[in-house]
Image 1 (cartoon, helix red, strand yellow):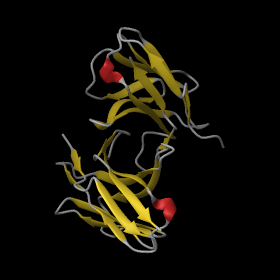
Image 2: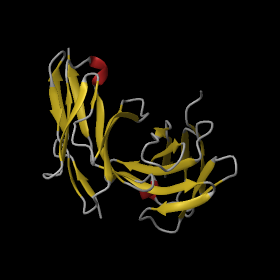
Image 3: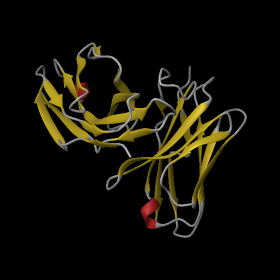
Length: 114
Length: 114
């Protein structure tokens, strides 16, 4: 079974631009979560989706948004990029948002904002 | 809000020796789960071990075991017979009973010396 895939793996953008990152969960998984990882702030929760509905949102500005499609694939969008948005963005999937279901992480998308 | 603290930014251990990584957390919840994740240099986050707060027995997975002290809100990871492949960043994480949101500690970089 294929793991969680994230595209693109690397991305360079300029301040003020917007970016869309994609996450394809493991087949059959309907829950997707996103995290931002930076050296300064560590790993921070962005959003959680289940069956196309956002269940939780972390403490990030409105420039960060996401969605989930009917096939469980998820995208996150960051508008008006700032230098501080440079980070590794990780996606994780699980069967359901239930404690018994293990979350599997993807390899991440490395975003660099110049 | 829940917080997770890892007080050891870096640790080193000799191959075949035992090492313990520390983690403390703060929560007012009674239903929660604790995890240790490993992030090797390739960046793919892998679940090492999990502990349900309602279970008194400490979790074990092969060479990995935890010391869960609920009253002290402490959750340490012991790695026995350390191997070169254990070298990685280790993150302690907290999850409430509902939802998939993980709160991570700052991480401990483990180096294994041959």
